[in-house]
Image 1 (tube, rainbow, N blue to C red):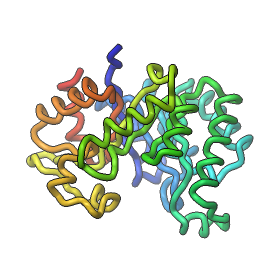
Image 2: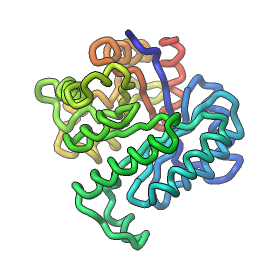
Image 3: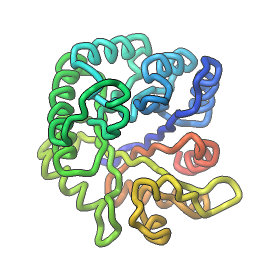
Image 4: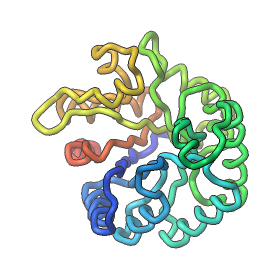
Length: 271
């Protein structure tokens, strides 16, 4: 069964009450389904920011993309997730991640575990949150085998990065991996991809600075073929998202705040 499209926007810069509330109302008016905040030191604190956004809106969901679970203890994070679920009227999606920025762990005066230890803790945290707050959707995003295995076995939403190369069909390979790891529960999973670059108004070429930061070995031509990068006219982008849904089953797309205004025109083409 083909899922309906779902669209999210990432909020990073807003810090005052009015900035967050205005951004949330604008996202709701533009047709976005959910507003996300990250969990990084130096960025807005997730819980108060999302609560402010939820209070300013009536239908917009709010979520994290994603909590660094290694910053938290399971019972304390589950308590706050439950509170945000209740105070938002059930409009919260919990994105969970293993953390990856060593400097943030050091700034928080926390040990920086190995990748294996962080992913093991992510599994533990996801299991705990699912058991204690079962009606909050869990999103896990990533690309590696071990993390995607945890996501396939425990999450409700899988965030795909599109792969780290463009040879063959890396997106299909990663989805096939998730399908095999998830088994019978795969059909219930929602597949997501975060769009890191798309054109602004008056252009059909995207600014590639964000994807280049994460994929430094790819050429501009290769980056333009990456699933997380959109180019062309509004109609061409809408067609590309339909293709990603029809070919790969991806129906949930998140864009950066800088792209929200232009992406609103894409949403209008798809609904």
